[in-house]
Image (cartoon, rainbow, N blue to C red; front, side):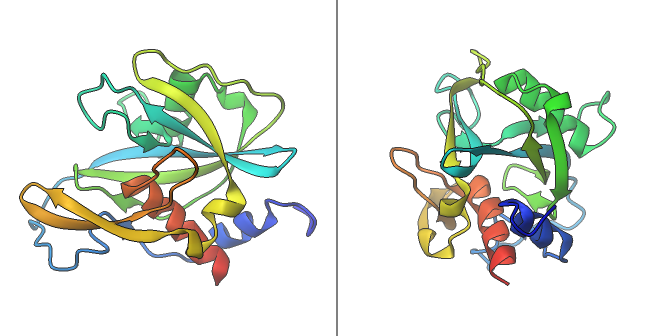
Length: 200
């Protein structure tokens, strides 16, 4: 990477030590069971250079899904038996969900794993999309594929803390809206962690 490369700050941030994140960061009073078993997963934070700079590829989940319908998410999912690791899972799921061939992705680095309230330990995999890529949403899972400028997502001032009731308790979380898209929860927390590391 050269100093003029717009992705250099991302790579440098990922090379620095970070802190694990979780959906409980803003809810310190939450009591978590000891010995809980988390399901490993990987998500692809896909970065695509373009005319307006670097974009982050996100998806809007189908409103027909049982879990997290209509929410904004990265392409990704749980680590299956055939996956070597979370990186392999993220790349496989990205191909399945948005039609991104793994050969077009240059992995830039990983962020610390993120624990979700749904029992997953998610590894964010940051990858640069090489060449031309036109998303092909998987009809059953993805309602829309869209992009957000990286500059918007790495600006801590764009984030706000909101809350709602979940399983009988008031839960606080990060949100980073962009146009008609309400980016919140684990997706926003992972992006906020990147923003914090880049601001250091």
